[in-house]
Image 1 (cartoon, rainbow, N blue to C red):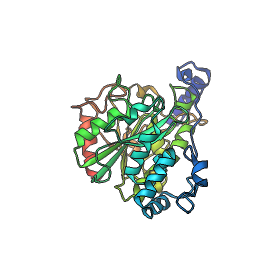
Image 2 (cartoon, helix red, strand yellow):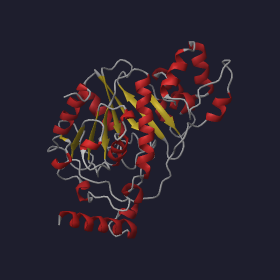
Image 3 (cartoon, rainbow, N blue to C red):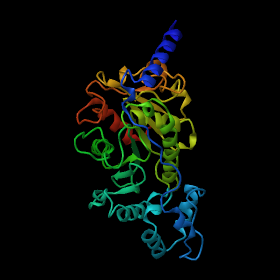
Image 4 (cartoon, rainbow, N blue to C red):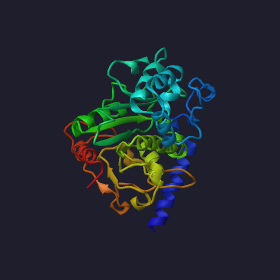
Length: 345
């Protein structure tokens, strides 16, 4: 009987998405940004240092890191100057070089605010709606690292909007870094094409699948630089990205924390190759989304259901869909403890 009811809910969800009777159709279709960084063509043809440069499409992050270790500081600086978009987005490039490259890449664009003094931009891709990653803290010396993976409606333009302080990657990352303390670094990672609104993109996994590939590559870049494996803090549709990525051990994560999640495209936490924590506030609208999968729609079981098997995170003091990182909440306190220990328990 329970399976029959779940099937009926799945049919209702599918019908709602297709016909638009439940508001799902209010979003707009997005095409995922994939492939190597912009400027790759000029990069692979460059012989200015007397040898071939690693191809962004085929070189592993480990190979990229090894290549840059062989370069002198003047050679590294020349590549930053000539190819800021490639150097700034190429996983395995030393952190300080990526900061320098992205400071150059954003100038003259509509995202020039990202070049403000003190900002540490680890990735910037102007294609589509724009993608960006920013670091809070000293990434190269941190004992533990956390990565915030956001959900829908986040891009380079909304990445740091001020009207929703704890619903943006920057707001969440700043709050977590403050609560966790100086021993950790937090990366706000808006490195994939997110859904816009709650249309078909949000109800399906296509954008999440593309995002999981980019997140895995990003994690491999941290590993190639001998940085700590990060804890991933995955909000809303971002938890779908993390769930798909966590099926593969190459994700390089010490744990994932999902909150406000519509599901992670897994039947249980055992399917994910890493420890899983889950939180959901009592008044989060995500509770109204059926936790089913049918004909490619929906994202599966509720990670906060005890039967799913995730470690529970209290969220009694969090409010709504974007209140989990509000100062003073039990959810932020628990998140900070996880971040400080790097997922160890």
